[in-house]
Length: 173
Image 1: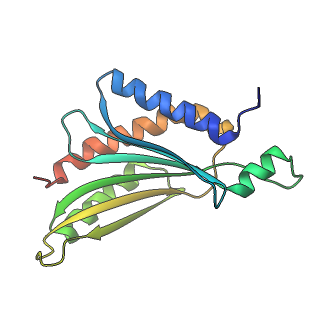
Image 2: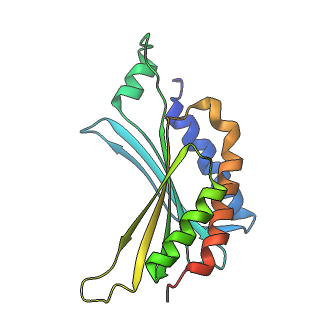
Image 3: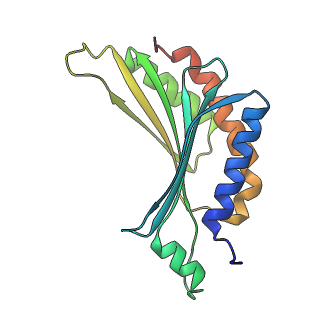
């Protein structure tokens, strides 16, 4: 038997916590992926979900690269192994200038000041641009490790709260 890596331990806890919310009926899991990139020797896990009656989605993305794995397994003296965590919300908005300002205010109230919130808009060529897909990334300023496992329930509660507050801005058909 081998000792699981930081990435594997975090992935199992995230997956279990998300599926517990799904079993409780609070959310619906829409998609998940667990990938190993053999060319770059990296791993990534993503799980996407929405509120039971909602259209907006949240996706938790966890990843670790070769340097993190090698530093952990080889016990490099100055290594700071951990995982990159990103949360991406997806919503369709009308009047993007007004909607995005309101969405930014909502996310800044919910999420810690140590996060960067990035909204990326896209629309289909030929459309007038009044209705856009908004992908809202919540980026953390540091890697996470097993010391943050206790924060996972709060983080998921933040994503559920964010989904609830974003839903009125959703204009998906």
